[in-house]
Image (cartoon, rainbow, N blue to C red; front, side):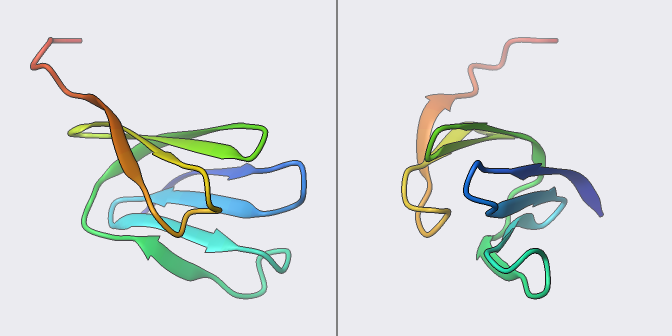
Length: 79
């Protein structure tokens, strides 16, 4: 299931799903599964940086989704 889609200023699309993140660089004509095996709740874009909220914390990509770094680990705090 797709949870959210966000667009970067250059038109790149990022889709948060129950099986990771998909990216498109051609107006959604084709999609690449760039990050798998995480339930992605939401996405945010600031400039060229993409942030993803996942069950284990917050991930960040600075290379259009090719790699993702865990920048905030989930601490077990309730919502």
